[in-house]
Amino acid sequence: MKVAIVGGGGLVGSCAGFALQAGKIVREIVLLDVNQDLAEGQALDILHGAALMADQTVRAGTNDDYKTADCIVITAGLRRKPDESRLDLINRNVALFRTILADMKKAGLKKDALVFVVSNPVDVLTYLAIKELGLPATQVLGLGTVLDTVRLRSLLAARLNVPPMQVSAVILGEHGDSMVPVWSAAQVAGLPLEKWPGASSAMIAEVEKRTRGSGAEVIKKKGGAGFAVGVSIADVVHSIALDQRRVLPVSTLQNGCYDLQDVAISVPTIVGRKGILGHVEVDLWPKERVALQHSGVVLRETIDKVLKG
Image (cartoon, rainbow, N blue to C red; front, side, top):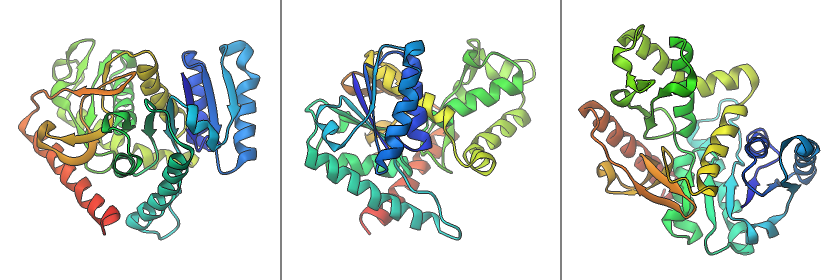
């Protein structure tokens, strides 16, 4: 599989490239960036470790690579300026994203190409890509709440002092303030979280609060997230490359699941080589279902302001 990473010269894109190299699954990794020297430098740095990592092709690319890419990962985005409103930042990122989409359409895409949106606001931009690229909605997905879910599991494991990979929990909804942690399904080693030694409503609230603020915490302390988002991206790409058909909380177009309509948002989604293979709707606590539907309303309002205003 050939994976092209747009914004590959930046922190998120380069970390995704390295995570894909470490995964040793995809055949070709191509980094694209408006700063060609930066893309070439990142690709070269990754390539230098190839002899210890995997037999892959790693290089900087151009828009011509859109034509032959199996999966295009879009990580390019702008950072918030001092005193800039959230809506102003969204508008600037939408403008940049539309430029990228125009370049992709001009170059031409493979009929079965998948477009994987990581740039924020990820749910809004995923919706935009679905509407403007002309691809079937099943071939466009966003990172959604995958990173939020990984953060929740990791922080919960640290708080309980248990192996992180034995923690099972998921966040649905918007990648943003209205995200919905699904505590009704949380487990440790296959056992209910609510019955685990040390678990309490206070502890759960503490972990949820820190998870919600994780992005801001990382930005404040090191300037931006890189490693965790990189491995989260690779996890989704690997599910595609290996046709694993895993259930992941990626952002996809909804028209009925949990009564969500005409919005890209994260629900349990089956991901494989052809993209989105289906959605899984399980019973949630009533308050979780209400919160998920509210998250859909929040995103619908943002889409209306930004894309139709």
